[in-house]
Amino acid sequence: MNELTFSVDPSSEGQRLDRYLSDQIKDQSRSYIQKLIRDGSVTCGGLSLKVSYKVASGDQIHVDIPDPVSLDILPQDIPLDIIYEDKDILIVNKPKGMVVHPAPGHYSDTLVNAVMYHCADQLSTINGVLRPGIVHRIDKDTSGVLVVCKNDMAHRKIAEQLACHSITRKYRAIVYNNIRQESGTVDAPIGRMDNDRKKMCVHPRHGRRAVTHFQVLEHFQDCAYIECSLETGRTHQIRVHMASIGHPLVGDTVYGPSKDRFGIQGQALHAMVLGFIHPSTGRYVEFSAPLPDYFTGLLEKLRKR
Image (tube, rainbow, N blue to C red; front, side):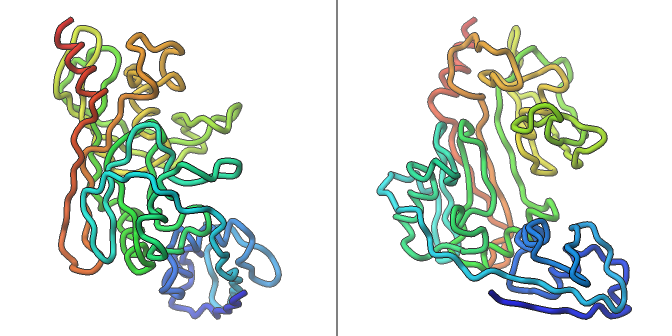
């Protein structure tokens, strides 16, 4: 256990706790610091604090950083569709149906198992035992571009870009019901459903700000092919936002019709483009992944109808 204590000076008065600690602890990401706070590892006067706590001059903030835990998940020789790789990052095209990282009771056949085999011990440790190298994720049934970080420096710098919403993220989707306008924006807070914590919804009272921009690429009789650009990155954001305006994603039986008329497994959603400032070079880089076969096949069916 690494125990740290910080005395808040007058110049930091009124700062949010997570932002204050991010300035003090340079070798940890803000998301990890927020996790420590939520886990009760950050205290003042013996009391656990909230992420939103405003620090006061003279506060003695105590932080307990647990020792790294050795990985208890195993590398697996699972083929990866690698788009790009260097000493800091690995860019992969995740297939539909693959879970990004292990979870309790499900420790195998994930993207993490595959990258552990490919990268050996060259993965960032910031997100802990179950998510080495993972700085962001996409849903199991969403395909497309995802970045894996090989070291903590790369992880911190990309996590900072995610936190300030400066990363380019463009998705392709097929939605039910033809959209009349050519483009639009959904600006609606997203939070967990009160009566089903596994599902997300537009939640005006307890949701976090979420913004999705969309553009129609192709109109069909009862569907539309669209591109979505994310300004924020909330769980299930595109799926929830499009369903909230009457255009659930084809194949999404969670937020759309319980039976999908096209017979595909999971939502028709593909992470097409990912762009960010490279952690070492400081230059903007952008990567893309081609549409998967099931997606192009569905488009052809719609064009022929």
